[in-house]
Length: 505
Image (cartoon, rainbow, N blue to C red):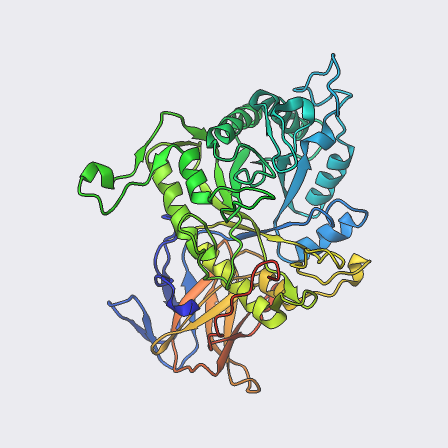
């Protein structure tokens, strides 16, 4: 059951960076020393949320964001509360298919580079107040150090990757008439043989990341390098192979987490297993999940939503042992997540449950230390495509696309959990700014909404409180705020745990 997962109180710090607190403004109340909760009267009180980890939202849609309707797509993304867009940049589509003898790969002005489509897309993103996250994938054949075959993608030369990374960062350094770009991701799912091989040699990816980071940081220290973006599951099928993400991460970081049951103190402590260090600024993952926002993967080294704290802890340990080199605190991101819905997919998650799962998954990721979440997709693909996880149903014309309920949940996430004489609420207003949020309660499905609290969101738009209320599982809660409208109504009744898969299986 979701409420029985290991969820520490909303008062606890998140990712070592949150200092959560609550201050009362008006009304009467007493502060209980045990649990740090406010005992309120029946008056409507106003609470304040202190500094917390932010929660920025992003979208990945390689179809809508690069097609003829991209301008509309970016407008819809911004209206959905999104501030980032992850854009896949196939290296092979920008660089020449065969390397000319006079080609200088570090020079963005080389006539052999084709920047036109990327320039248009980046310009449209920035014009719609979206931050581009450029994800470099798919090396041209001449830049491969290891050739691939049907089941494996091979691996690029680290030096060739660095040369392209330098040209890309120079192209978007703000001095060439193009908008500046400061966020660059190195590859997609490098623990999956379809994207990079050999997958069990994480040192290959480590070399790629270090070379890439040196080039991108060399152009500007303000540039941010994102590594990881791992597939969540180990797979040993004949069609492709993937290594379990935690196993890959340990190898990549040269890290042994230690055995807490070992008799020797030295064996219980985490330790470095090699001298190599890795240069990056954010670690990302793709925690696709069977069974909802609090679901756990079956294997210990796989990472679904409920397992994110294990990955967060490994990242913290790596930083503590100086395995990671960055000029800023290393962030933890999710750069791909979603569930297919029913409709349109027969075995997808029902729309109402999907809407609840969307809010809960955002809460679960934030509570696990994630500060940026990327949803896949903006719009469903046309049937029979397997991709039906969009915030909007498919339509030939994006302007006519109908939003799913989860679009509201993604824009203005809100959850409420019933305790003993309390209701814990959390959310992020759609503007991600300081604002006053009103929390309302309704008894049953047809009662009237009444205001039970007001909460001042912090500068990241996060609001949270533990309310002293006599509530029941038949009650519903919602949040409203200027500029955000109304969140979806959230039931205090916990739905039956249902093991829907992310892709309708």
